[in-house]
Length: 580
Image 1 (cartoon, rainbow, N blue to C red):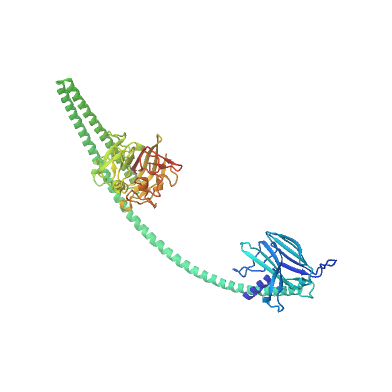
Image 2 (cartoon, rainbow, N blue to C red):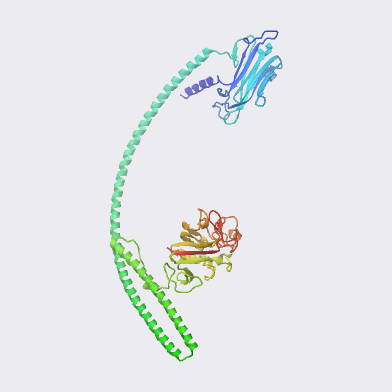
């Protein structure tokens, strides 16, 4: 069957080879009256629109090369220098040529009249011979051009005329229609045999495919039955485990409800006792103060006016101090009532719904008596250098912190502040680890402290800035830094706020980066960004925000922020975090 297809391909190639470069000579029809008589006319033609090359691609010898454009056409006459007729004694002599630079030739020389024209798609050369020697000589027509891929193509066609031959010849051979009919008959026979063989092969393959389909159908039926059996067993096992899980969960829910009810009763009792004791202590303190004031007033009556005034001032100060303490206790009591109300509502919701929606764990009653913490909606009861800020001793860190009690409901722990040049932020790793500065002015809380806060609870981050006398801020839904073993790597949530930040700019550009200082290079750049830009930060390659840079400048090393459309240079910066 393969031999049949090969024969068809050979016959098709023979048919195609009849097209392409055409070289003919006519020795009889062209004559001229007078002393000069034309013995023959040689014509060479090539047309890229209709021709298919009789040469093949060397890389793909079975493919037919198509000529895209023509660059030159030349006609050579073969001349033998000796009498032996050997191939060594022959050479090709140029008769005429046209190229892309000389596309036209019309001349008479050596008893030959040459008319030739060439463009990129078609070339023609017509030569009239006067010498009998030319009319019986061997000629070669050669065409050069490019194929569609830009490769060079060379075509040639030879024509041999022996003396005594007449008529038209193509490629040195007479045109014989009988041979063409024989070729067509052979081609038809080969095609018929190939089609019959193809039918037999397709029948065999269809029978084999039918058998394969039957086997696959049987195998699929067997596998489906096995799968249904396994699914049924899995369903039974799942139902059994579900029943057991529901029974265990019901017991746990009942136990937890009992514990919550006991806890609610205990909290209510202790809170009532605390209120009674606190009220009694306050009343005792007020009575003592009143008695002290009366005694001091009576004593002051016998003194001079200056002594009386001093005593009165002292009494006023004590009264103001006690009022502040009373305001604090009232705020503390209100906060405890809010906590109790939230817990009671949560317990009531769980009891009514029958589902455990949360878990409240109190280790002991000392939680109600702890020192105040930085939280939302707390009152200011101490005077500080900055309004609405208080200094507290954090129980987790065992160190003093600064709490912003006003911004967006308050409860913000300030971890960084920049207001002037009094504190240098171009520090080493140890300083940024332990913190530096003073909460009354500019400071950095310390990477260890920030990590210890954010590793225990979820925090949000707010950055307040003042740019050109306008207060702006950036807010991030979550904030955390890893331990020193991971070089205090930054973890950020999504951004919002009044200071713009396009994707990949601002602080978001530094997300998931490790902290770097001048003596500890952890950035993604080949250079030390902290040393070059004179700060400690989560540098990458290198920054789109540099809030620990040099204060008061407007350059690469200064405190600045990339909004996505350019840098801004704030004259006040405060970074703060709040527990979620």
